[in-house]
Amino acid sequence: MAAMKQIAATVRGGTGKGAARSVRRDGRVPGVIYGGGEAAEAISVDYKTPNQLVYAGHFLTTIFEVDIAGKKQRVIPRDYQLDVVKDTPLHVDFLRLKPGSTLRVNVPVHFLNQETCPGLKKGGVLNIVRHTIEMRAPADNIPASIDIDLATMDINESVHVSSIKLPDGCRVISREKDQTIASIAPPSRQEETPAAAAAAAPAAGAAQIGRAHV
Image (cartoon, rainbow, N blue to C red):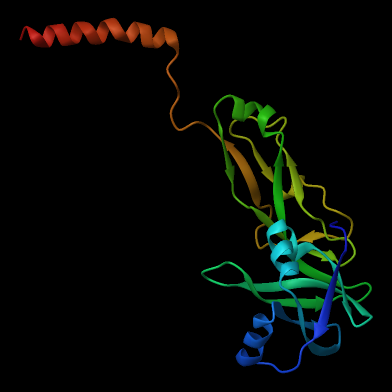
């Protein structure tokens, strides 16, 4: 599970595009905290905070403790908007987390030991079917990633969800019975061996001489 991080926020007055633009002019990013059986709360955070966190990775699977004038709430980001030109944060939505709650998350998949994978060393290609896995997880046990070990995988072998050990309380959400995560595909073209290339060279030369005398 990703470690819980701290965020300082302030309550913002007003809603709508005009109020949001005013917040951004002050170097802050508007946001909202909702859910947990309580009313939605409009907030703003310093621009540097979400800008750093979004690009650091695992933003949508990290639990945060938001401090608003001494009142602390456990939340998880559910969505964020980026400027289409600058790629800078424009808005962040946070979901309140209550004790014992569970939620749907998309957990990124990481592939380990690619440099020692037998199939890849033979020229095979790692075919990634799913870069993330959607699952339902306890709020206190959200995995930061699902790690797939490729140390023993050979060409034409695949890894499926059923072979993954999930953290306690987590279950995969999928319409497929046993979805494929990745496979080692054979190379699209087998390289010629030195012996085969040497044998082919005289034959090609003879063919060219024959055509020259026709």
